[in-house]
Image (cartoon, rainbow, N blue to C red):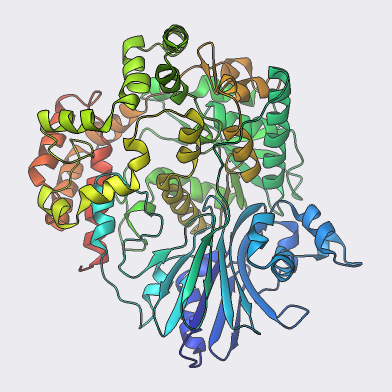
Length: 631
C-alpha cells in the first residue's frame, strides 16, 4: 500500500516541484521504500513506495512507458497478474521482472477506459496520455485504496489522503456541512462527499477522465442482481465457493515480508486464518502471525475458546492484545497535534496497539476478515421475500429454525426481517408522524438538530440516497447487492487504510474480492440461509478447514460489556469532560438536550442503550475542535 499524488494545471501553467514535494512529504509514512516524482510542463505525478509484493521491488512509476505516450502513478496490487501478462504479451521478460504498473499501462493502451474491468485487485491510479493531454483516474471496485481530489477550472489535484491536498494554496480549507449532516444521521451513501468543501472522493468502481476543459465520471463495475447461479448440488456450490475463497486468500498472501491475520474466533477471521495457514506465505518463510483481542476482566466478551481452537491446529504464531484497558473510542488516548483527515479515520487504542506490535515484528501485510457478513450474506432478506410471495408456512418454518439457532425471539425476527421490510412507504410515514418522528425518515434518536437538518434539506436528501431502503423488500438478491456497495463499507475501508498506513502496514481483505462477491450475490437463497443456518455456503465450504465449533457457531459476541467496562468502569470522569468539550464544538449541528438525554439513558442501563451515539458525538466534536474548520 503506497501513496500517490498529482497536479494537472489545466490552464497550461508549469507545475512547481515544491508543491508536489510537499504533498508527498505530508504523507511520508506511506513511502518507507522511497519516493519518485515525474514533472513535465503542466503535469506532475508522485509516488511514495511501500514494497509488499515480490514484484513491487521492480516498480519504477511514475515514468514514461516504452511507447513514450503514457505515464502512470499507481497504488496497486493486481491479483490476476499471470492472466493479464499472458493476454497483453511481454515478450521474454519473466513474471518477476514485470511490475503491476507496467501491466496497468499496457492494459490501458490496449483497452482504454474499459481496461479497469479487466483488472482484479486493489488499486487507485492515474494514467497520463501525453498525446491527448488527458488524465485517466481509476479506483478499485470496493474502494480499498483511497482516492481524493480537488477540481477547478485552472487545476486538478489528487492524492491518497486529504491532508496533502489541504496544503495546496488553491484548495480551500472549509468544512462541508452536508457531510456533517449525513454523518449525524448515519447516512454515508454519498460516496463522492468528504468533510471538506470542494474536496471529493472518486467512488469505488468508477473512472474519472480529466481534460483541460471538463471531466467525465463513469462506472465500470457493478453487481448485477438479475444473475442467478444454478448448480446441481449443495456440494458443488460449497466446492466452488471454497475454490474462489482460497484463491482470494492466496492472492493476498503474496508478500515480500512476514504476514499476519486478525483472528477474533468468528467465522470470517477464522476462515481467513485457517486457509492462509495452509498456503505459502509470500517469500518470508516465516509462520503466519495471528493478532487477537483478549479480555481477562470482561469474561463474557472473551473469545479465547474459539481463538484457541484455531491455534490448536498449529503452524501460526499468536499475538494477543489485552483489550480490557484499551479504550474503544477515537481520540480518547491521543495527545498532540491533529493528524487525521476526518472523524472517521481516528484510531482507537486498539488500532494503535495492533499497529505498533505488527511494526515491531517486521510485518507489512495483514489479512482481515472484515465484513464477510455482507459478502456471503446472512440471507435474512429472504424472509421478507417469502412474506411478499405469500409463502407463510415456509417463512414461519425458516424463522423458527433461525430463532432456535441464534437463541432469539421468533416474533422479533419476523417483525425485523420479514414484516417491517415490507411495510409500504405511506404506512411508515404515518407511523413516524404518530410516534413523534415528524417528516424525518432517519432514526428517532439521531443526534442532529432539527433546524440544521431542515437547513440542509436532509429529508429529501435521505429519500434520494436511501430510496432503496425505504421501499419494501421484494428481492433478496437485490438487497444483497446493495449491502455490498453501501457507502459505510467504503468509509470503513478508507479509515482502515489510512490508520494502517501510519504504521507501514497494508491491510488486505479476502472477502472484498470482485470474483467472490459476484459469485456470492448470484447464489440461490438456499446457499445463504438454510434450516436456520445463515451463511450456509461458507459453512459448507470450510468443512475440514475450520474447527467444527467455529464452523457451526451460530451467534456473535456482544461487545457492549467491554465498552462499558473500559468507559464507565475506568474513565467515566474523563469521558464526561470530553463529551462536554465535544458538544461545544458541534453545538450548531446537534441537539445538546438529545445528546445528554441519550447519555443519561445509557448510564442508567448501559446494556440496553446502544453506545454508538458516543462515538458519533466524540468523533465529530473532538475532530472539529482540532481541525479548526469553518463552514
